[in-house]
Every structure is written in structure tokens, then in C-alpha cells.
Amino acid sequence: MRYLPDKPSLGFLRREAKDLLAALRESSPTATLADAQRALAVEYGLREWAELRSEVERRAAGVPVPPEGLAEALADAFGLGVLVAPAAPVSFTPMGRCWSLTTDRGRWLAVTVYPWITNEQAERGARLRDAAVGAGLCAPTPVRSPSGRLIESVQDGNWRVHEWIEVGPSPVLPAPAAIARQVGSAYGTLHSLALPADSPVHWYVTTRKSDAEWQDLLSRARAARKPWADQLARTLPVLAELRTIDADLDADLILCNSNLIPEHVRIGHQDQLVITEWDFAGSLPATQEVGVALGQWALRPHLNVEAAKAFRRGYTETAGTWPDLDLSSFAVATTAYLNWTYNTICEAIDPSDADQADVSERGTLDLLDRPMTRAGLHQLLAAIDS
Image (tube, one colour):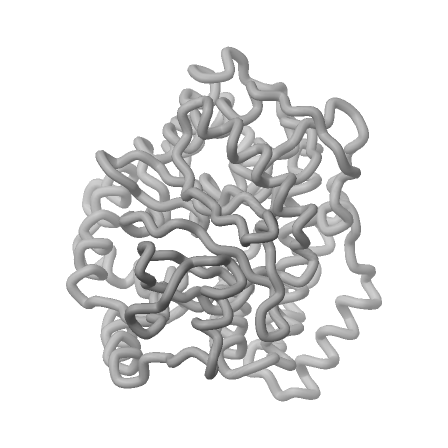
């Protein structure tokens, strides 16, 4: 699901709808602007274009303000200089809200991160990011605090800061073939670096919830009187099929971005892709990360054959070869998807705050309306090889 900025522009969304129309016409030549507007609204977790317009108006009337002292504390913790303007909200993501800070030394983006993203974890991502930039990829420049750290604890949260860069939106979905080709090329570049892995494969992509835990989640949803509880019940057998996909994850590990999803990419100068997120970097076999990438870029919101083929072309042009994929290549993709679905539903049932409640409720509906399926993965494999 796409996340609206805190101060969205209707004009900006109209341009996104036109971009999406061009992408839709790659596979459906008769698609109309109304089709694109409706599809864009669904990507933002709403049902119709009119609802999206209403949401823009609502946000314009209630712009978030930072907690007292947060901006000053962030500027002090990262040595950014003296604030010369109030902090401005950028967007709320599952990790929390991002803020734009303007000081006498420049403009910065402050990003709140998950508690498990420690300085050690951020350093792992910085190692891959620096090598990637050296190989020609584009990414924001991280800021180190006066103590040399990438992550600092501020007001009971973990934060990092980037130098501000002017970028456009995340790519629309379904992804245009030209974007998918660039993404495939980026993955090919990262995998060609073949940086040695320095940690085990993260538990999040190796550990799956049991049938009993999913049934308990359903019971909790029904107890909370969630309107989508019956839909969850109907989807559980589909998710159970995904849990049968497995693979050996111990061989040929390299350092991977691990979360190069559409939400972590922006369109930069001259349509160059800017990869904004590196803190999830970790050890994976290259074939498994290709499986994750295809699930994100060629199965959302549905199977996108042209994007899948374009991704393969971009990857092969850069890496020189294309990995031999089968259903087991999606073991990490399915585990990550299952855990994301489970955790999103948990947050929707018992959210930590109003912002999280909104994001998780919409995210749950999106996940249940368009679940990943074993059959869809088979179709994806067939499309790539055709």
C-alpha cells in the first residue's frame, strides 16, 4: 500500500494518475483515466478517487505538529546546526513519522526507525549503500552524529538523518516496464558487488507463524469485531499454502538490501531511481532476493508480465546472467509477506496510536483483498520464462 504524504497535493495525485494510466495501457490499451484514478485510490488504501480527494482535504485541514522539543533534540543529537524554521511533517510510514528539518547548515530528513535497527545494523546498510553509490546507484547521503553514529535515541525512539534531496514520488504500481528494467538493473548491480555477508539470515525471513497462531489472530480479530474478520478466515487457507514453500538459505550468502520495495524508491533527476532505504540490509542468497524483488515489483497489485520481463532484462544486462529460479526461490518472499501480513493485522487489532491505526487498517484490507498466492507465483515463473 502507498502512503500519502502529510501534506498531499491534489495536482500531484492527478499527475500520478496520468503516470499510472500510461503503465496500465502497457497491458490494457483501452484503460481510461477514470480507471487509473480508481486504481491509484486503491493503492492508497481507499476505494474511489472521490475518497482520495476527500482524504487530501482532510489532511490539509489537520497537518501534524512535532512533539515538543523533538526538532531541537534531533538537531542537537546529529549536530545539524540551529533550527531556522519549524519542523515540517513529511509522511507517516509503518516505522513512524518523518520530519523535514531546516537549520543554518541546510535541510535534512529525520527518519524514525524500528527499535531493532541499531547502529550496528545501520552500519551494515551503510557499507552496502557506499559500495552501491560507488557502482553508480543513487541514494541519499546519511548524516553521522558528532559521536560518529548513524542511529541516535531521541525522545525514546531510534532516529537517523539524511541530507535532504529533491525527489519525485515512488513509482506507480503496476510498475511501468521502463521502471522495472531500472530496478532489475539496480539489483544486478548490487548482486554483482557480492559483498561478503557478516551476519546470519535475519529471523524475520526464516521464521513463520504456526497454524495455531494464525487461528488465534482470527479469534482476536473477531473479538475486536473487525469487519474484515470473515475475509481473513477465507484467506487463511491461501496463506497456509504459501507456508509450504521452503528452501535452503545457508549457501552463497551475500550482503543484500533486503527491502528494495517500491515504497523505498523515488524518481530522481532525469528519471534516475533513488534508493532511499538501506537499514534493512542483511545476508541472503541472491536468488532469494530476486524472488523478493519479483514479488514486490511484478505481483503488485497483480501479475504484471511486462514488468517481470523488463526486470529480467535489466538484471541480466547488468549482472551478465539470470539466476535459475523455481518455486523455492520465493521462500524468503513468502515468509516476509506472511510475517508482514500477520504483524499488520496485529497492529490493526491493537494499534499503538491513531496514525498507526489508520495505516494498519488500510494495509490489512489491501493485504486481504489481494493476497500473494502459490498459483500466482507459478504464473510469475511461467511469465518470466516465456
